[in-house]
Image 1 (cartoon, one colour):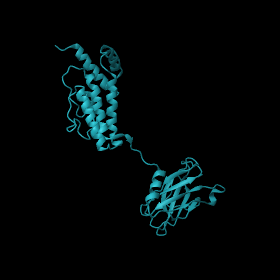
Image 2: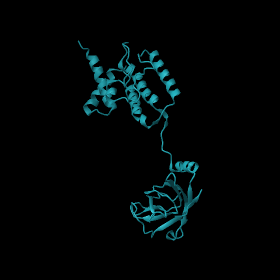
Image 3: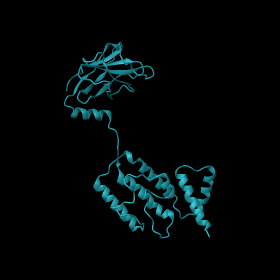
Image 4: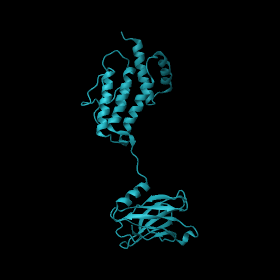
Length: 285
């Protein structure tokens, strides 16, 4: 005969799994609140811990690869600890989780990872083993990614610094404020690498613009082109110092000058340059 208490415990586990994924309706929430006090030995918090570990596993594609020696030490340490706790697992040479395979939602609802370490029949509760299931989920992340070092895109200033160190054909010049700005003086400069077709601009004191009314637009003057080349539109969100990427729409073979104009939102294809505010002549750097 089926033990009603075991049936209730299984129902508790199902509801906890649904709660992890926020899938409980109001009736199920009330049922869960009734069942939890009936099983005080079950460590409910470990369910949330396992869910957090699985979330980390899904985030592994944003993480840096782990050094091979660290990975090996971590695998050995975790598997040895699990054996000491009486949990049967594959050896580090034959890991239980297939490389690159993330823990799935169905796995989590069944209380497994991908694939989970098989618990020995030692009479312990599901929640006693769940702590190690969570550890296995964490191992998926740890051996698949070096998660203390999150990937981050280098800043514009950092990319500019790299270009200045590595480009052997760098040219650039300082901005000269034009009459359209009146008494306002804008500082800054630009750099450009013809070989890399990469460049950056720096501004200091550029008036803040309203993007809904107007935007700044860069023009790269190449004598081999009939019209100035569109270098991209941008905004000044503060009048402090800031850096901007150059996004040339065409290849720039020979840069003779760079200019900044004020244009309508989104920029224009060809500028009449009636609102020319900055001009710079490049020199080898």
